[in-house]
Every structure is written in C-alpha cells, then in structure tokens.
Length: 254
Image 1 (tube, rainbow, N blue to C red):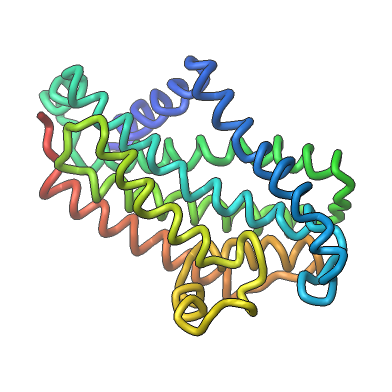
Image 2: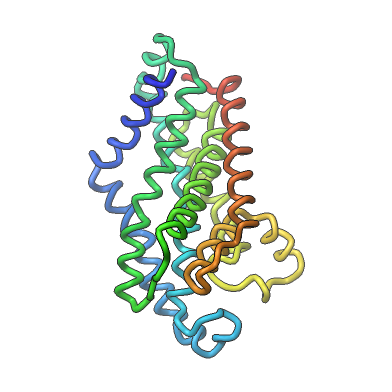
C-alpha cells in the first residue's frame, strides 16, 4: 500500500509542474489578491489600526490570503480525479491491487502539496510590500503545518463531494458554492468583530478563520494560538477520515 500511495502521490505532484499554466495560476492568483486587494484597502487599515492590530493591511492580509488559498486547492484534486475517470486511468489502476482509498489519499495529499507551493511566493511578495517576518523555525513549522491541515481538510471535502461524479463542471460548481461563503464569513480578509451575529456564529466554526488567526498571531504578535492549531488538526483528521470512507464506498470509476 505504501509504494502504491507514494507512486500515485508523486504523480499528482509532478502533474502540477508539468503544466506550466496550472503552475502559473497556482502561484500568481494569491499574489494578485495580496497586491490588488491589499493595496486597495491599505488606507482603511491605517485609519482603523486599532481594529486590524496593525497599520499595514498587507501584514494583516497575508495570513488570510494564504488561508483562502488552501481552500481552493481541493478543486484541482477533484478535477484530477474526474480527468482520470474520463480517460480511463483510474480503471486501469483499479485492475491492480490498488484500492479506492489509496487513490483518495494520493489525491488529497497531492492537492495539499500543490497548495504549499504558494507559500514561499506569498512570503516573498509580502516582504516586498514591506511586511517584516521574524519567526523562529518552530513558529514557521507551526504555521506551515496549520496551512497543510487546512489544505488536507478541504481537499478531502472536495474529493468526497465529487466522488461519484464524472462531469467536468462539478468541481467548479462545488468550488463556487463552498468558496465564497467560507471566505467572506471568515476572519481572512477583515476582522470578524464587525460581523452581524449570524456571521459570527459561522466564523466561529469556519476553519479559514482559525487558519488566518493562527498565522496572524504569529505575524503580528509572535505567539502561537494552540486552540486554532488543535482545531485545524481535528478538522483535517475528521475530513480525511470521512473522505476515506466515502471514497471506499461511493467512488465511481466511470
């Protein structure tokens, strides 16, 4: 099982690097958020520094954009699954002793790894915009681990929802349905203190809020929010387990 999982995982990662267009979009899209959204709202952060916790909005925004980037990586994993179904690759794999659960795990981990590619680019862009990052190696590891947990959780969610689908449009529809509510009901782009009550309730359970909070506490205060880190670990473990079971039972080959 380990060799099968490793082989399929490596294939997923290499597919990213073999497609320059996908790689370009993966890297450039979050950078554009940081550049355009961050620059556009920069003055508001200066006027409301007590609310944002900093007068540099890009400093506030960086953890949030990285968090939302982990939300979108799951769509690529589900698109990869549908492509494998449509072109017969998955049927050929399942003729071998490889199980549906192994396929699911390779897709989820491959998608999460694809999301991590964005981190060094975003960090470099933030530094270019004047953000100062003085984290210890241990703090960097905690932040990256939190982002990895988020990516694994959402990749598992997307794969579970689209397990039976062979329609190219399904991942995009699911992504649009999930991404916008989770993004705008989180603390990724602005403080949740200004939310109406019903949005605060959603934000209190929203993994994106916890990922943004974890990174933001590290960037702005140099402290680790262990509650947020623990929540993300539970989120990733729970969704991975659900996706594993769903794929074993309902993954449709064609």
